[in-house]
Amino acid sequence: SITRHYKFDIKLQNVTRLCHTKSIVTVNGQFPGPRIVAWEGDRLVIKVVNHVQNNISIHWHGILQLQTGWADGAAYVTQCPIQTSQSYVYNFTIIGQRGTLFWHAHISWLRSTVYGEWWNVDCEAVISQALQTGGGPNVSDAYTINGLPGPLYNCSAKDTFKLKVKPGKTYLLRLINAALNHELFFSIANHSLTVVEADAVYVKPFETNTLLIAPGQTTNVLLKTKPQYPNATFFMTARPYVTGLGTFDNSTVAGILKYEIPTNTLHSAASIKKLPLFKPFLPPLNDTSFATNFTNQLRSLASAQFPANVPQKVDRRFFFTIGLGTSPCQHNQTCQGPNGTMFAASINNISFAQPTTALLQAHFFGQSNGVYTSDFPISPIIPFNYTSSTPPNNTHVSNGTKLVVLPFNTSVELVMQGTSILGAESHPLHLHGFNFFVVGQGFGNFDSNKDPAKFNLVDPIKRNTVGVPSGGWVAIRFLADNPGVWFLHCHLEIHASWGLKMAWVVLDGKLPNQKLLPPPVDLPKC
Ligand code: C2O
Image (tube, rainbow, N blue to C red):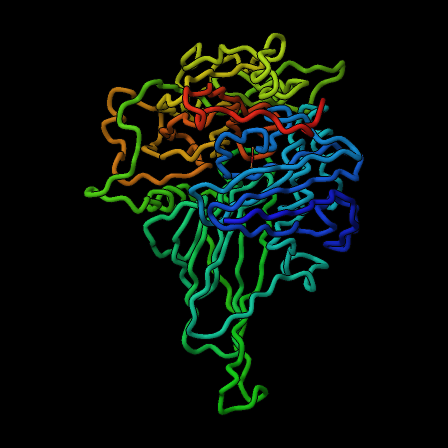
């Protein structure tokens, strides 16, 4: 293993898509940003220098950050943001992980400008307007594949991602849903894909024509090209899976898979006739049964003979409701949220209030007073019928910076129950600092008497982001063996902005390798 050094210069760059040019915050002027390649065991030392007016922080999404929580990059959780003309060195080691993960900005909506969906207007303006008026945000103008919207949008044909392949080969495609607010179906015409890995953990391989990937999730697939298809082109397309109410970007991004003409062909290139462009078939927008079947197929490599190391004995059980709600209008005029209120989102009815200093610092230096409290509720304070069509009368959330404190090596079972307040919707929940086992999922209200008997403790998938199903629940287990402060949040940016987030404090263990390391000297100040 070696140490790899990178420098990320955060700077503005003009980028044109859909005939709109705008200045966006980039890393090293690149859109999408640069790729980092490392081997298991390597140390990464990444110096991030902020040359823009926005505060910035970079999150290495899915990296476990064992003992190195200071490098996790969640603004106001594990660090104060890097201010203009300041820098910070992220220093961490890749331990026991292999596959595809991604990095992104972890402050406000700056993630969008480094990756993902494309807005013709400034994304920071979109979110601040939404938060001010209390309404839903404007939706994106396009989805992108490697930053390119493709030919199905106006003024975009030249911005099409093209993948050239040879016949009769197997390719590994690394797919990341870096969109802000949409789960996506993805398919390549006339080709099936073999799923081999999710969130940088191997899975039992299975074939599918269409994938579902939620924001924050990554999926590696094998693409076998056909033995014969010279000069053929195939669309690869993605479009959203949506079950909630409200407006969304109902468009389709397309890239092109193009078979090369074999050089050993007996015919000249010109004599090989061009085949028509093949188009894939994607499931309907709200196809929850497809979503369920797809996610049920994701299983780890474990088997009855060699079961996964799921915590069998549970020390702490939590039941979190995940969903939307409202807050009273803060302005004199009427707000644009439901019935003149403002949109909010919460876990166990608590909408996360962002602190003004980093939670990890407050914890490490024993200065949590006035920054956070350790009384996050372990289950909803007022239970109700979470998935009935008539939501409770009062949809208002309460605000707070409340955390759960866990002793080192606590084994945790967490059931996340989606609510149908303001519409049942699938929420991709992302946990920092851990991979968790997805031991169960179901529809309707979780039944603590019957459902645990059906948990899969043999070959559940291990990952860092899981969809809480629309109108249902998901159960996860993890071992709190990484000291630090770890965010849990919806990876739909708008829900995170509305407060659908909370954090765990995991205390140090007794041994030296069970303790959070001290902060780096250049840790940014708030
Ligand atoms: Cu990719 Cu806290 O997120």
